[in-house]
Amino acid sequence: MKNAFEQNIIAMVWDFDKTLIRNYMQEPLFRRYNIQADVFWNEINRLHRFYAKRNININRDTCYLNHILTYVKSGLLKGLSNRILRECGKELDFFPGLPDFFSDIKTQIEENDLFKKHDIKLEHYVVSTGFAETIRGSAIAPFVDGVFGCEFIESPARPGYSDEDPIEAENEISQIAVALDNTSKTRYLFEINKGSNKFPQEIDVNSFISKENRRIPFENMIYIADGPSDVPAFSILNSFGGSTFAIYPKGDKKAFQQAEQLRKDKRVQIFGEADYTNGSHSWMWLCEQVNSIANRLVLQKEESIRKSSSAPPGHL
Image 1: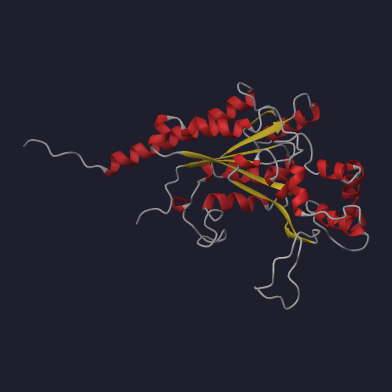
Image 2 (image 1 turned 120 degrees about the horizontal axis):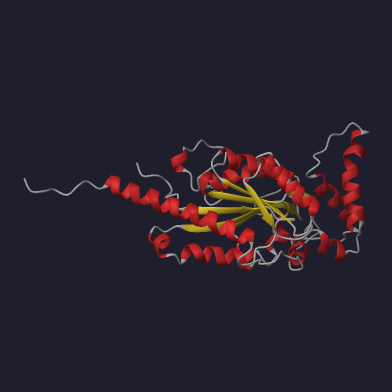
């Protein structure tokens, strides 16, 4: 039986905040509504203690989503919609070399005659605990094959709803549709791995799928992120033969020490500055890694072709 996928795709999977952009993606939103970012994040850091005193446990990674909705309800984020979240994406400040790096590294693979012969391709994915709509509105969006992030509902289904209910016009966000935390990020690695992100009707992420029938093997993936919050995702890739790379902003000694600790703890294989311009350390390592994976795929495919072909008949 023929395998479901050719396994000829390489995936670069990216964190977003402080990996692709300098700060948190909520900054343009807070500027728009004249909200002090440090005040908001200080409140988030104290929420766990606030609710613990009331015998309520909360998820520290995703509690900020409910606090955003509290700000909406209070009027501090009055009228906040998914459209506004997308518009805020236009204001994000990307690290040097972006978004050009995303298309340039794809071109390296697509225009290589040897890789083209074996139909080897590269895909980019973003997996973030931030807002998916803000990422979709950013400069990186046209170069990304999939975005996984937190999402909001503007018009929830009412009690007794019908599938034929009309789609309402833009409203304030009022419910959480998807909430990603640091651990649940790994779910989306498996979606990319199995192919359920591309074939959601045919493939369930929890279904058993043998390694040879998965769309993108983990050893064909590179995960790029900035910190300890990505340890669960780093661990998955390290365990299954993938590649892991930590990013730190140039000149940020504390972030550098954090990245070095990740390397010492064998959470990541290597780290580099958040500079994706041609010739930088990060540019060279990521390009080398992608090309190394592509060359391995070529050797595997050529070996498979040789093994499937019998020797020609000779003279007796």
